[in-house]
Image 1 (cartoon, rainbow, N blue to C red):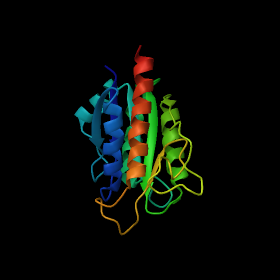
Image 2: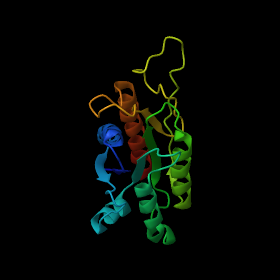
Image 3: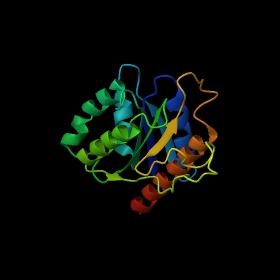
Image 4: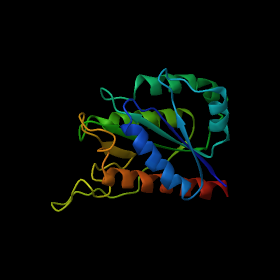
Length: 189
């Protein structure tokens, strides 16, 4: 069975909630594992071994000041050891992010994740979803935030994790996780 790792950092719990939805979708197709980057931006040796054995890695980070969190960046910098040996080459990669505003420069965060994946010679998978961009669209619709290259969510700065991300963003995350896992299963052969 294909192994999918949802590797994420969450500062306030909203991105964790999104990561759990991505994992739920991925686990409906393959073996899923949730891996949190700690508050210091660190992973354990066992975590690095799990990443090495994964068929797909789905990156997740909040968007802070138009970029991944410093904790995510620290993990990414530490990934230079597997990079040097091209240990993640041809693994499936994908990404998701959440911020307080509807835009919040989330695209910069996803682009950073794409660059990280390309540095590792990974294969990037986008959402494969049309945006909900009609007058009748609501915040609870699938892909309302309109991500193509990665799954996007919005959590108001004063919203608790019980309130946000909303059900449309979480369903987007679930379907995104399932899509990535489906590609990992196909490539595993």
